[in-house]
Image (cartoon, rainbow over all chains, first blue to last red; front, top):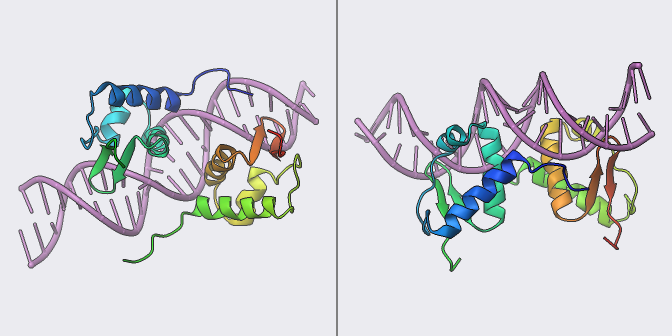
Length: 76
Length: 76
DNA sequence: AGTAATTTGTTCGTATGTATC
DNA sequence: AGATACATACGAACAAATTAC
């Protein structure tokens, strides 16, 4: 059964995915830090962690511990 | 380079996946509850929640709120 | 050169809502 | 009506890697 409403983490993941695909975040540029994203979307960092895992699994981003999360290039 | 450590949730997910595929947990049977799994593997229910999300995304299980987590049949 | 601060990612514990038995 | 169980979310802590000073 599908969930009755769209989950917060899924809304955020889709929003970021749309921004990436629109060119707002070009390839190999750094996304705002998880802390900033948590503030921007008014959610906890735990929710952002779930979002990042989703984006990573979709092949849209890659994270570098200690550095940041970057947009994947078209040629992986 | 030192080999990257396998994550706890990934180890558990792989262990359960192997048990499912070995026939230990046949199709449409109920898995142990998250609480039991948490005790069995000595991890938190939050980690088990991540494990369950992984297994679900792999198409191996499906969760029924209020009932349990069941093994998917070959005909999804 | 070296220490402190930042960042990612994981984990825990808890709380809440919803659905089932 | 009450107990059980999933799914999501929060807050906090930690290690490892990176960056800043």
